[in-house]
Every structure is written in structure tokens, then in C-alpha cells.
Image 1 (cartoon, rainbow, N blue to C red):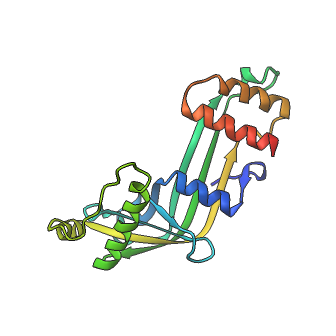
Image 2: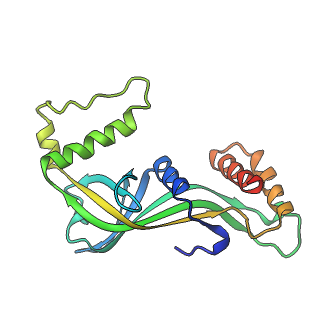
Length: 205
């Protein structure tokens, strides 16, 4: 990912929190059928290795897991908004896009054993169901489970490096940045509100 120093975010705590909050990611690999991408929930175990480990599962019918070579890349995308040059109220400015994203790279490892798959499913269900008022229970004793396990492939990605990009108009003077915040704060959509919040944090930090 192209990350100018002005926009680079390298705080591990911040990057990990972002990956957890935006866990529906894009997994990109090179394999038997060339470059392939899948959109999957990826969970982070930060306690493994220097950068943590991602884990998830995909349908066995999805051929992406076959013959993966080289690095795998997981793209975690966050809020993004178009920024109009009219908001700067200054000559010589151009449109841009503000956004936040994290790319994690690492070694892709297949998980096909029963206990390994069950562990991935248990942890996935816990992560997404526990915040709900009435969590769904994963019944491992249900007769249908064995068939479901045969229909999926689990995987882990040992993270070797992480890139974070917080593109929030840091290359503009503070006055212009505050005008962008003001323009975004009056908009009702979630992405505008979130980018405005992050820009304000950046200005006040």
C-alpha cells in the first residue's frame, strides 16, 4: 500500500483495535487460479507472534485456499468520504478522498482437522454473538455439524507486517482541516461522522 509518512499509522494498539472493529475483510492470495480475493470475517489473535495471527474459514467449494503461494494480504477497510475542494475555501486545491485502512500480510496456513475447525468456529461465534442481547448458541453436538465441517476449510495467517493508513487531510493547514471537519459534521451519514471524529482527534492530539 502506498503510505506517505504524513498518513502512516504504526501504533500496534490502534491498528489491532481497527482490525477488530472492521473485521469483515478482503483476503487476497496468489494460487492455482491466479490472484484471488474473498470477502470474509477475519479475527485477530494478538497474542501469537510479534504481530498476531488472523484466522477464519471459507467454503471448501471456494478454490482460493488451494495452492496458495507467497504472501497473503488481508485488507481491512474503514470509513471513507469524498472531500470537496470547495470546503477549503482556498485557491489551488483539488478534490480528494479521506479514509482509513489497514493491510496485514503473512503466511497462509490451511486448517482441516476437526478440532482446529471447531476452535475457529467457536471463537468466531463468541466474537460475533457475545455482544448480542440474546446470543445464538453453537451446538457442537447437533447432527448437522459434521456435514458443515466437511463443507468448509479453516485457515490461519501468521502476520509478518502491518501497514496502517489514516488519510485525514494531514497534508493541509489546520484551518483547512477544521473546515473539512465542519462540512462533514453536518452530514448525516455514518462515514462522514466517523471521518470527522477521527480528523478532530488528529487535530487535538
